[in-house]
Image 1 (spheres, rainbow, N blue to C red):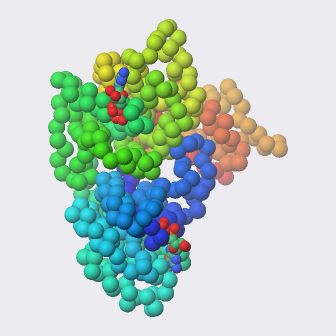
Image 2 (image 1 turned 60 degrees about the vertical axis):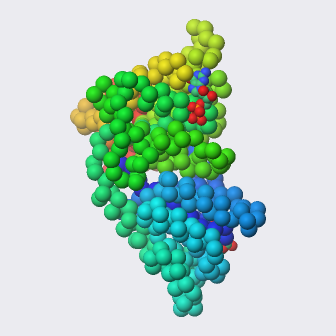
Image 3 (image 1 turned 90 degrees about the horizontal axis):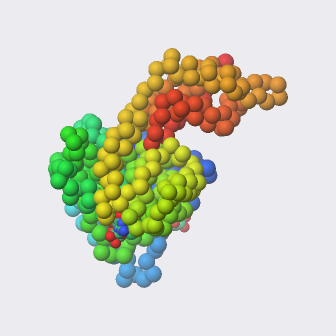
Length: 438
Ligand code: GDP
Ligand code: GDP
């Protein structure tokens, strides 16, 4: 299930970051132990009541002059329209309405995406309400007064956002086809891979009917099996403008990954795996997606009998937080092993949806505990009562123990390894939830 994406669009200083932080809450500031969690909060997970969505802040580097404001705003709106399911258009009651607000409103209206117009800095509803009405002129429906700084009106705003995301979910048919996102740094060969796959006779390409959400996706059939490649139109159509600022590529990656079941992370064999690759991989890992690492341009490097081993080792080192990822060595240029990709995708999909019966799981557990005693602290030993699988995509297990504090990360890792030895689960992360049972 992909989480909806909500983007905040607005001029500099209207309070986008303040709103973003108010919505994201404190949780996101926890430093995670893997890369990809950006410091400057380009995106964050938001939970409101029972609903979850991913929020992105499309504002980036501010324009240097007033003349550049329109093009800055246009880019923001474009990326929001391209990636988001719902857009929060944020304006500032103190700055009032300006020309670029109208331009953005036009763009958003034409996109037919749901837009929530929020008027920020209404710190005092009595005092500023009259000024809020001015924003009706944008023709974007009812302006919602909020104060991000004093957290006023935030609940109403979220209610309105969730109303739209719920409708989206209702509109979306249950689509069983595996959804695949091809991600990676610029020039690693993403477009070449997609062109190779789609251009092949054995692959039948069909258009995706329906929703705006799917407009950039491509459905393909290969050996009677169907797959959906996410964002491929965007991949094939290279942006002419040099706007691939890091922020925008992160936003695009987050959006594509969010909607995917499987992420193919493309790495350039000539360059080797880099920290930036790790950052991108972190986004997919964090979201529990299936992962295939495709080391591309394999044709272009000199090889001996140790080359594959060396490359694998390096990838495993740099991406040590995802030891479960599948690795393949391909060439989009020559087509080498390109079609094996479908097979691996199938495998990973199956692994993500694998359900292990509690009985079988606890046999593994009993054996694991017998082989390596659980940790103890100050004379108290960890007792593991039992384990059960509660979810798929990613497979999620609840472990019931006597004391959570005694459950070390390393012991969870040990149990994970035992489960993987027994069932594989290649390409998919596993999630463990430890619960106390008194
Ligand atoms: P951004 O450029 O759109 O991300 O705007 P910021 O979030 O950085 O906010 C710009 C300025 O407006 C900062 O000085 C904030 O403290 C201020 N600000 C943000 N929200 C509010 C608000 O609700 N009320 C008031 N009075 N000031 C706010
Ligand atoms: P993207 O930016 O990730 O979409 O990368 P492109 O698909 O545009 O490829 C970037 C460059 O790498 C182009 O010049 C491609 O021709 C080249 N390239 C892509 N795949 C391969 C490959 O498998 N082998 C070699 N030698 N070059 C490749």
